[in-house]
Image (cartoon, rainbow, N blue to C red):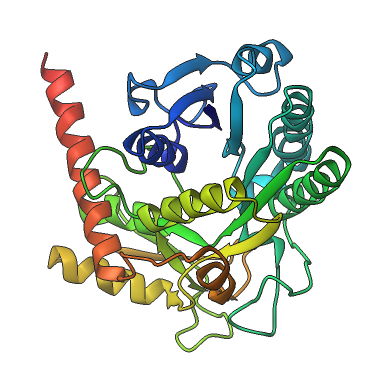
Length: 333
């Protein structure tokens, strides 16, 4: 049986493909390479260069009729961009998910794992935030993902599909074996950007707001190592295959770090100070988001192995160094 991975050439998707191949799975990747990279997909995986919004691309992916599961990563993820371009985000994240679900139903795919986000929670008084919290996204990005969650729920009820919705908190770090990492040059993830600034690939690091109602005035987030996030996907896949009921799970450690705490971790790892600049708060950024992570541990038996900010930062720095070294080698040829 085959697992179809959308967005499998991107940051998180490429790690998913590696884990599936390591486990002996047959994998088909769909990616339009708008933010992903062809080299990030191993040759062992079948690669389809195309957009999930194209029915012909989906027909190719499901043509064998032997697809056991879809793991859906493809989409747009930058919160401030969604505020500027809400229609683009609703089209890319929600409308295209509709088409993907329709194709999965036609192909009678039994299992679906959806890459969602903590942005569906918006502002919350209770921290850590549980899966049962009221859903009140404050950005089109969060709303586009919530709409897709609701659509998946209804489609599953009508067609016998079982699913797992995984709500990511802040994903960071890179594959411990150095096979993949966050490679988008203009990525907005804090640890990625801080690593670039620390290594001299950016002139400075901008802090978006120091006046949040938090202990040091900067936003607090729950940072999860990408490898632990992928192990959560593998646990969700095993759960569904074993007959588990459709459910939703937070993916985080249940502990948050502020922007300034992350900066200090990067400075410790590199033994050099970062050049900082202050900027305004960004639209769609809540002061704090920390995962209530009890359910995923109890229901899926998920046990994180990289729950350490220093390790997350070190792996991100190692990947940035590797990217720069490989670019220099290619430019010298």
